[in-house]
Length: 329
Image (cartoon, rainbow, N blue to C red; front, side):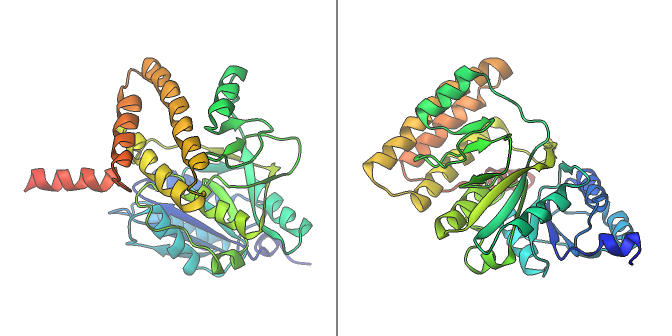
């Protein structure tokens, strides 16, 4: 019989956290990992911040429970690059990829591991379900279905629509198979990374890099499942987030890029993308009235114009840093 500490270290899994300029949120997330009923084999933090004020405390906490820690700093900036680096620097299986601003129920890790035991070689990944799912009203759900925008509602289809918009299952009565994963909490068998990698063309915040990666696995024939027994809360820290204008521009650029990459470029699928953007425009007009921020509309319009003219991918964070350097010069 082993003692409690050894028992908690039995899992062969690893956690990878990509982070930038969120030291306090990162520390809380690491504390949450260490509070799990089953500890992972290793933890890898890939930090592209300029400074690491909570690193020493994180190292102390991990050493206190005997958890192997790989703290990669300095790291190249960009979510996809940081995640790929973390995957390469670890050996644990399965690989948990989590944001630096989440909270997991104490048994979330254990419940996901249990789900892996229930499936065969066809299983590629498992994710948890939101702890506090926001349920949209029925009219909004019907609108999103009409325009194929995707969205978040209970017992959604779990499909990726023709415009490359997912219908997200925010809650379900049981385990659901999906065509995609949302990236703030997801896990994969290590073998899947022999076939697919996160797309490093998607720089910075890398909107929809999670859906892109997981959808490619789905098309390869892997099964992706979501279990309601693993409860996760995405706290959505405000630091390092883009303005609505920049976010909409980047979202549009990534949307067009990923649509070309993952969907047949037939008139039907192209029309589905533009039809979805019409529906999204109307919803964003409503956001302007709610928030008093015109960026939700101007960013969408500018982004659509840029993509119609063949602009390609954009990184507002890099553009912002470039402007700041020019002002200092």
